[in-house]
Image (cartoon, rainbow, N blue to C red):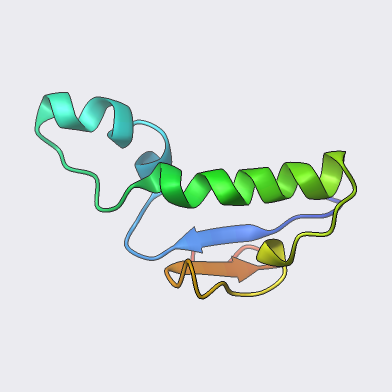
Length: 80
């Protein structure tokens, strides 16, 4: 992958926490650990504002006290 990127890792979560589990989990009796949409929305909005509207977004540059479970890495991190 080339160009600007930011790997975002959320403590105690995996990929499905942001895709399948919030939609399919409750009918199957699986409770999502934390509202993943409440974490994903501001980061996606910041990404779009930074790259589509050319507005710098500090949320993408450093850890946020509002989202302490989020770790930002310029390269792939916390994954095996």
